[in-house]
Length: 424
Image (tube, rainbow, N blue to C red; front, side, top):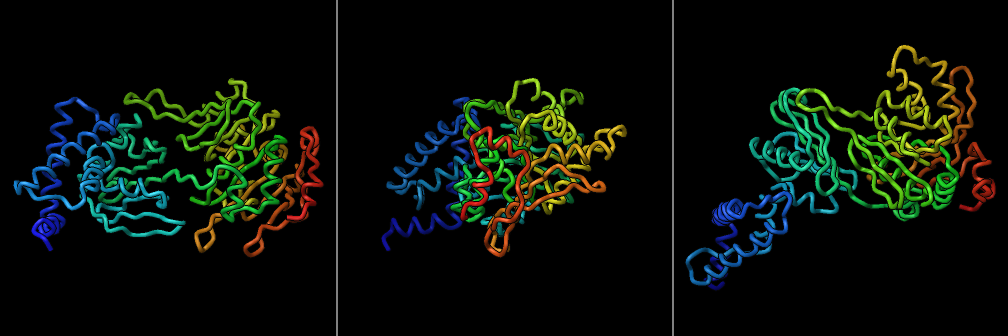
């Protein structure tokens, strides 16, 4: 081993931390002197970091300083510290990582392919607080004792959820759900094994025909991805309005307006909730409405919109298609005492056409477990359903059910009976 190689080996151990720390301090000073905002100008920060590391590497040839073994890696770390999100940045940059969460500074987890992993990343409480502050800076949302929970969108499109220390025991709890694009269209879900080709053709035809579709499933079952894939099948001639807590939907469409909720200000005013957005979307001349994650009384406004003849898509948490319908019948009751089940149950039966239920298999595969038709009949406050596709083992098979509103398929030139009779 040469003297230079030996020096590099030393610099990769404990001494390397001192080298990086020194470069970090010099870069911060240069950024402050130049008046650069690292969050809004990461490219500028990267160029400054590259110049600093190059100068350091040149000086190392004279023996004045220890060299660094991986200049590119040091540049990446410096940029992550200033313009990125520090030790978590490498997980944000890793396309295989689906979610990151911090239970406490010494326990940082990630999820890959639906499975949890405890990482070797160890933070301090101060580092976690600093990271949260930097993440929220880009979103315009705030976190304090009056609002100890927050949902926000990171620059890369990832969803941030934070629970402040005091509500979360001892430390601030952080979740980052990454927007990992694995499928943008229904045929790509087929390639991933989440959906059969036969079911994909049926769902695409149902979207074109304007049926109202509810996507249900557990957390991380792929509901948003399915909504995106369904929305991609909406004809480009139609105007789409979407409403979400935080912007997560992403699908190609030429005429689409996306709306998201807003937290109240310090005075407690200015809050915009999902129910407001659903109402507002009806004033924007939509041909379709999409509501991401129906959780509460906004379900009533969604039902009223769907019942008025406006086609729509929505998602909610539920353990089966049947439970999704039950939840659709329960959530509107939160809107007020004057809303009763005698009105809600038949309205759900008349408004919802299909329920697509998703699940996560033991091996981490996200898949469609059943597609259920809602023919509109109610018997003893129970909404009748007909299974159209059901999962048997590892295959999604055709069942005997037929969707309602076959006239809408015919108006689009689709023979739904022939479509369902096809060989999968």
